[in-house]
Structures are given as structure tokens and as C-alpha cells.
Image 1 (cartoon, rainbow, N blue to C red):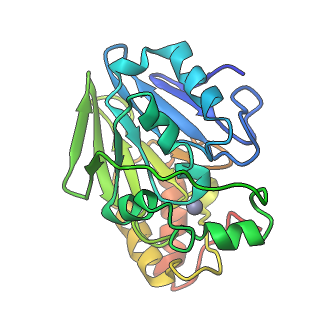
Image 2 (image 1 turned 120 degrees about the vertical axis):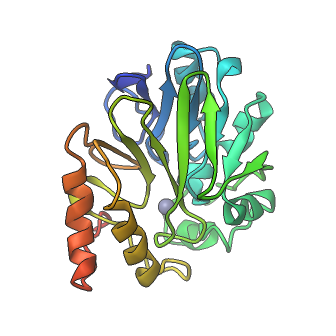
Length: 248
Ligand SMILES: [Zn+2]
């Protein structure tokens, strides 16, 4: 299963659904940003077939040339592959909440126990503990080669969720994890750390940014004019109404 280039300097390297980059049904969309001199992986899939995810990235670049793996949040479909990445020498970046949960492979904090009981993961699936090398917050800018990534706090879908903004003179990319999806959809679940009020603050903040392409953790990619999608969600929250749920 090869990597799938979706725009200049951006590849899908894991997905549950993309016909070209499909790795495993439990994986989120995982991306590679690579400018020929450096870059980052964004999210890590569930880890069940982490070897396929990393092989897809190796088709595009030498992993040793990457700055590391940026993890949007601690849900297993995004963070379960982090331990495998660390094992091959990639540095891991995530928020403090994500770092704590992954270090302990905390199945309550990450909601994995609940998700597994709901049938979302196989009965024998477990989260491998992973040590985050660098905790990131809103103030942090990360660089590798010519790729610059801005970290933006984005709680709501779960605690400690961050999104990653990349521009560098080209289009403004927003790697949104499970925070925002095409057509302004959001991901709200009946779990303890999904917080609607924080979600609204996050989306209203993101609507104040330049966003050309929205590269979410699931579903359709929005490769241009993505500010419209962000605005749609923000306009809904501004009227105190939750936007449509991505998960139905
Ligand atoms: Zn999630």
C-alpha cells in the first residue's frame, strides 16, 4: 500500500478509508509533511500495522531526516502507533495531557477501555506506552528542514487536543486531527472529556486564522478554500448550536 500524495509536500501515509493509502480499518488519516530537506509525520494510526505506516513514509523520505511525529491527541486511532515510531528513533511531540496518558498507556484517560467495550477496537487491542520527547503548547513552533509547524491548542473533542498549522509561504495547512472535518463537522462523543463549551472556544479561535487546506483525521480532505469549512462550524457555535457531528 503506497503513500498517496495529496498536495505539494503532503502525503497520506495511513488511513482506514483512502483507496491509495489504506493501512488498517482502525487507523486515522496519518500524514507526512516533507519538503525535500525535512518534515514531520502527523498522527500515528492505531499501531496495529505501524510497519505499513512507516513503510509508506519511507517511500517518500528517509525517516532519519524527519523532525519526528506530531500527535494531535491521545485517542488510540491517532496515538497507538507512537510507540513503534519511537522504537525506530523518531522523536515524539504532543501536549502535556497526551504525554501523561501515553506514558501510562492510560485506558481510562484515553477512553480506550470504553471504545473497546463499544466494539470500536478488537478485544485484544492494547495501547503501547510511549514516552513523548517534547511536550508542546500553543507557544511552540517546530522546525525541520524548511518545514515550520505552529502548535495550536484545540481542546473540545478531548482534553489536550492540539492542531498543527503549516504555512511557510505556501498555502496555509491545518492538520486538524479530530477537531474539525470537511463541511464544518465536528466530533462529539458521549465521553467524559468531550467538552462542548471548550469545543466552541476552539473552533471560534480557529476561524480567526488563515486556512487554505484542512487535513483532518478522518473523512474528506479539503485542499482549497477550507476557511469556508472552518467558518461554517464557527457560525454554528456562535449561535450556541453544536455543528453537525462527523460521527453518525
Ligand atoms: Zn479522537
